[in-house]
Structures are given as structure tokens and as C-alpha cells.
Length: 210
Image (cartoon, rainbow, N blue to C red):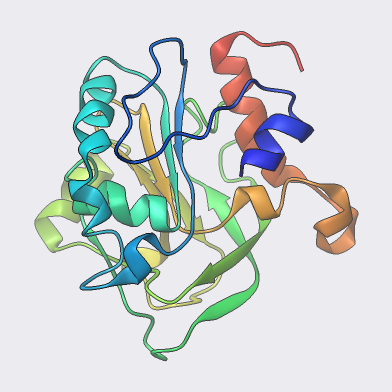
């Protein structure tokens, strides 16, 4: 993630440790994938109580663009910044493959360069990637246009094939697939790179010329 933001998109990206203070001169926050605390207890649940998350919540309330990818998505749900939960894949196995997601909300800071219902080839790599929400939560997600991405196929039994959601205000987005693994042409099937438009959308939001 840091490589893509820094080397591909030439952003001044800073790595921030979970016990450090959040820098004051930032315009967006990205919670990357990985295995925080070795995914002990539940993926993301311990990291959701890290000191820096309190600051992330304050910045979310102020409208700062925040993106959580894979483990970052899990942290956003476990911390209450996004509704629902991420459960173990039905196979109980780690899943690593290429798939497609469909853009269902192109009004967020991370999707404004896409067309509605555009299909995006993208990589997934997770063991606890199955999004779940109860019926009441799903109704609210649909009513408030909070479903950002769905899978083009049923890859892991996610509720309504949901691959990514946002908060009601739209500035906090969580997604299970990995746009950073799909943002360079050399890595993409068919030499396509539309997943890079997630980062281009952020640049557009921040007023940065690509």
C-alpha cells in the first residue's frame, strides 16, 4: 500500500505506528491489509482498540477520507466505524485469487472516477473476508446507499455479495479486495488496471492532478 501511494501515485505517504499520534498535516487515512496482532481472537478486533483508533474516529467525524482494505476493513467494523462484521470464509481456508467487483456507489472519495456498475478486476487475499450484516443493517445500507462494491460472483458467501461499504456520510470506506495489488498494469490480468482508479478518485477528492 505504501509503495503504491508513494511510488506509483507520488503522494507524500507516512507510515504511522499504532501507538503514535496521528500527524496533523494529513489529508486522508488508509488502513492497509495484513494480520494485525496475528488475527488473534478475531481479525482486527485487537487493533480496533489501539490508541491511534480514537484519533481515526475523530478524523472520521470531521469528514476526512478514510479507506480500510482487508484487515483495515476488519478494523473499521470492529471499531464501530462501519456496520456489520467479517466472518471466516465458508471453506475455512485462506483465499487468494483474482475476481471482479461492481461499483454500486460512485459518490465516495474513493469511487468518484468510476461509472456506476463498472466492473473492476481485482485481487482478493483473505481468510476472514465474508461480510455479514443482519436484515435491519442491510436495509439501512441499501436505504443510505452505503453498499459501495459487490462481487461479480459469489466468491465467499458474503451477504448480498457485498465486497465493500461506507458509513452514512460516505467518507469512510471499507473493502475486502486489494486495490493496491491491482493498481499496476504489470500485475493485472489482461494488462488492465482499473483498480488504480480507487486511488485516482482519492487524488481527485484532494484536488491533486494525476
